[in-house]
Image (cartoon, rainbow, N blue to C red):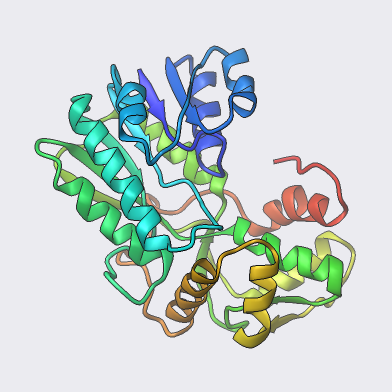
Length: 300
């Protein structure tokens, strides 16, 4: 039995879909029975529970040969550190109680940073907590910045007419499609061929500048010459909070973007065939961003 936390999220969903297509027996965990139903229709077992509930997670993990562990996003958390610590403690307790031997933990490029990288530094502490579980074989999967993070810039362009974000426009850095993370996670969960404590970075198809991303997205929606603007924090933070983020979560994301801009949050591995993934930003812009901009369902 392969157990997947956060099964309706950006990486959990493609992980589950790939495993189901391969005929694997899986249990999907989420907070909504309705959202888990499509997996059940394809043969999955569903478990509804909160990630912070150690008793529920113990039941969810019981019988698992391997678990895909991720901290579900909580943009409204009053304090991200308190929330992520609670989830990490819940998972650790449940993994020990259920005697799980293998875990793929979704972390991030930059998780070597104990502080100064916002949400990514919180994942550093999640890694450290899970590493303290006696006898656990764990692989911390560290993907880079998600293409999906650019959806907020798309929505800003749709509503206000400018394509903007907190990152520098001329800074090349690796970005990745969440579906590629899910595909790799599924592959690793099936193989279960890791021991001890390991990390593996995923660096996407290539490094990309936000200036380039703007041009590619513009071409996908027929707006040739679209340019990118680096938004000042004093403008970006109120917009983030207006979208539903807590003050603390907004501050953490601002801190992460500064760490990227300053060259502090960077991969540890050189790019290789192993950590390069297939989906190009051109494909993502055409199949996901353009339909979102046009108010349609994305095709990927």
